[in-house]
Image (cartoon, rainbow, N blue to C red; front, side, top):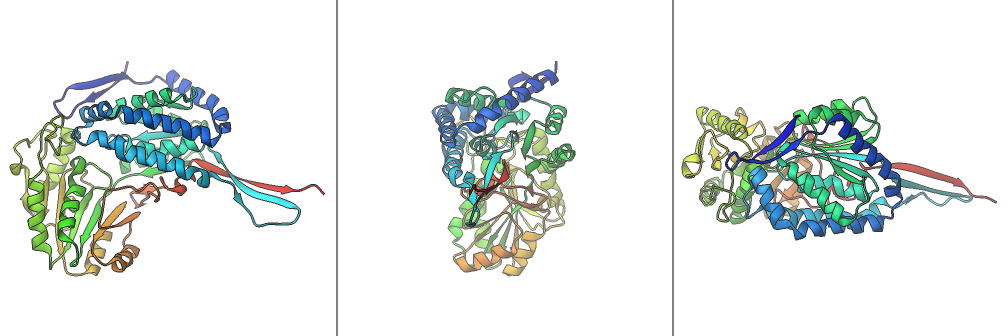
Length: 463
């Protein structure tokens, strides 16, 4: 029997082990979801919202234990993991419930004598959510909440590294009183997921992960006329203008680069700094980064834990070594952090200057605790460099000039444009990307469009 194991990056211990679902078990999951969808779609939006809120409340009641479980599975510092539930998770779920009535309301046509005309949104059926390990609750709730609120049933397949998060979801919705089959999780392999996507009972697929994974999802869906939402890679840039509040820019750029060991789709991975403030910015980043404490993430004093695997850390180390060989300079490196150890997931946050776009570290997604800083002489140069990437998820500018920031945002190829902040998803705004970052929208009222289909009602009234 095939099994999935969660190997902790902390010490290599086996955190959990679960059998992979058999084809018969996957079929039963799909059967239950399909059997439940008509009654769930007929349930009022108000009742659906109550059940989502009960699940959120259950998660909040268990935030500390859920947080520790996350730490053991993927290595984020335990001082941070409970906040994923207490802040972003509950904020997004509750805001989506608030947005749902207007987003799902009938859209009337203009008055016409003798007719009643409107457009209604209906659920697509069953939504398959394929979720990643790096923010196991934040990324998944983006799809799960709107899908359920819109009247769909949901099947969740979580990354092998965080399979226990899928089980927590099931426990929360069971405690909330969700009818059988409306929400289910499955521990499945890639072949089973591809078969599920090809199954006519699946109406939409929401995937967050790598570009390679996105291509596999799209290929599996290509034989059917269903939608896919793909949030894939990122190489998000930041631009510090000459008029920036440097204290703010330094603190937020360092946090945006190294929170969660840089393992975020919208982490800052490239920083462009105006030459007039470059030296002061670099000095500040050096000091801020060296204040981090790398270590066992179960320790409350640790501010940055290990990367998810030794293999992932080895890729980042390779990028750093290549950049150094090409003339870059490390203003912070592994040598500054006693817990760093080559061959392990423990990698101290590294800041590089003297980098350029010929280097992998400035071109390819790192998904780890490394960032390069480049000196620029103008807005035009910064924009050109920011756009020189196959990705476009988010980008930020640091400035006191709001109008200039908006004008620059019009020129930067990105899904989200920030001024004086980064690495944050506002649930009232659309979360989307361009280029190899994928396609589709989550969050905001627009996020409900993917998990619904429209039906036009064209009624000629009786005399």
